[in-house]
Length: 202
Image (cartoon, rainbow, N blue to C red; front, top):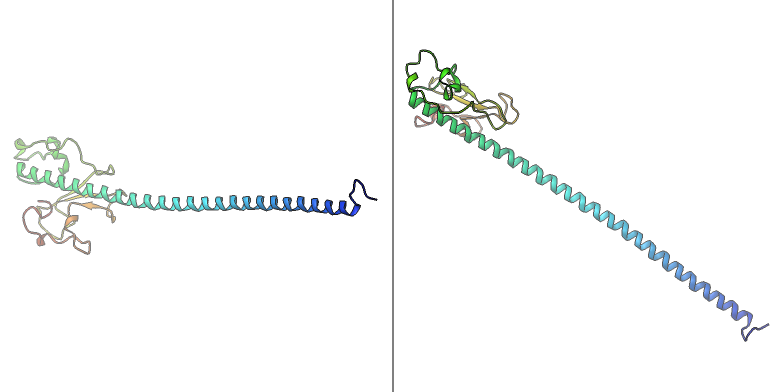
């Protein structure tokens, strides 16, 4: 029986339409929420990828920087040995000879280290303030005559830094002869160098 001019079947149709409208809206809301979740998940993945790339680049830069820094320190140590060799040449000019291995580098800063029978003791001059150490805090080794050069010349000497690892006779050792190495990394014999300043650091 119609109420207010609306038949029962019209009311049912209207109810179905309302239900369909609400259902459509509900579906739309669910789809929107799903898209937002997907977008958040995608954003998180992108962020993780960016972080991974940045970390990889940072590690690469750090490795390269440390490598460059280590080589720079070795180059500075080589220059230090060159200067020390120059100091020994000055000592020879003053005293007429290089320090003996027994005297060692100590005679460069301590007159008491001179051998007792040194006739040139009166000409001694202090050339260093203290014992020289390398860039890694280890003492410089002095050998005379040279044990690294292929020569029997007694007027040769070695200056050796044990390098970053602080151990003797390893690949990172640095000597006053390193600039004389050939393409194979071997120190040429003293006879192959011209000039009195080129043999063993004379």
